[in-house]
Length: 275
Image (cartoon, rainbow, N blue to C red; front, side, top):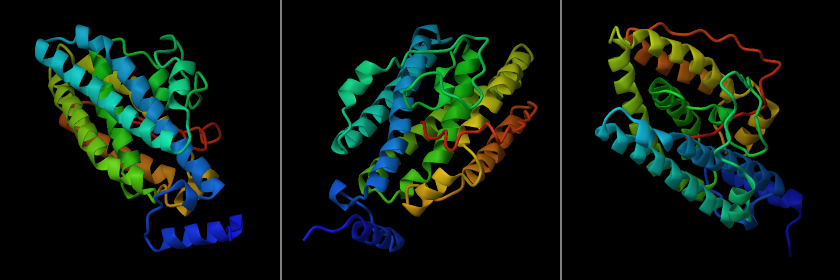
């Protein structure tokens, strides 16, 4: 006898409460599947858009060693996107049509500040609509965006959805390598009188953009994610952990920690997940 939606929800929430993982579509309620797909699309679309933004810097990197480093980072991001899209295919998402429908190379003009909005209808985190025009910008992506993604995706490593949880260990290891690459360069540039001013300018520009991606405190949608075991923490808790982490490397580089003034009314319910 088929379970009613209420019975299915009761069984699903009981499993989550006991720390068991959800492994199949058959176990999911529509609410669970819808929220899971939303979060996974944010990650998958952001991975691919991020990789496309990095590709030009394979040719423009300052040394051949850095050409290889950028190529490796771009390859990692494409792999992460592919891993996530494979999981989404299993949930019934038409990935090939999606990749054809959306322009993941799309970037806004230099004069545009998006705040908390997206520039198109794909699910990427809006930071990936900004162009990477300089080496300083590229390094800020490693320092800030890859670090922000790492803080956000810590919850995915404990997700109630087993297939997602299992792929996150490998993804997180590579994201931490990207952050380490950025941190090394930030300290190097910050302590170099020739580059310190431009590095500080890039930090001041990118830090508020990344702080905007974490979503509203106490958001209704995030509470649903927590109920379903898809997240563990409030948006602002993750934001504050990220900010404290950034402060350490900024101080190590001899730079000034930027400030961020929140506009809580304009922040999205959830602007998360990337990598």
